[in-house]
Amino acid sequence: MDITNFLKKSDNEKSTFEYAATKKFTDENGKAIPWVFKKLSIDEYERIREECTSINFADKGKTKFNNTLFNKKFVCNSIVEPNLNNAELQDSYGVKKAEDLVTLMFDNAGEYYNLLGYLLEVNGFKSVGEYAEEAKN
Image (cartoon, rainbow, N blue to C red; front, top):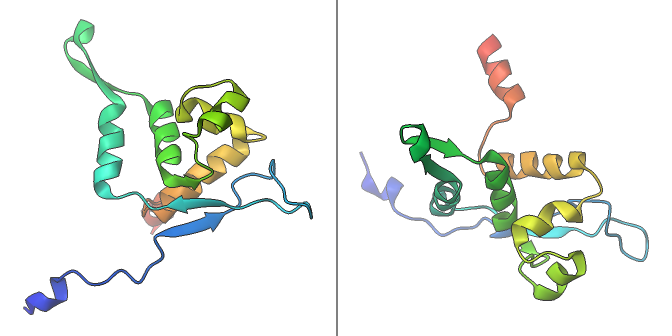
């Protein structure tokens, strides 16, 4: 086997991409303003998972995973622009953390969860429908 096939290659893929996450923010022509996103590295993903996992000593040391917090952190860490850590932006919504801000920036839950699904797919995760389709075959 030729080891050169496994050597690191230059990344030709764009490091960021745009997506109109919500119709809440529009330009002067009424068109949704695209946000800038990035794919998360495996290390970033694992860090977020660890931050959302806790040990419940009252329940024999069982681990508890906070899926809601994970989703928010996953989305927040994927967003490059707008900067969700900007104090002026947070103050305008009356919050102090990106995780508290992100859901307030959407008109409805559907937009937010569509974005979450899109970001999961961009990061290589299959949708529930894709798993169901594979199971059928």
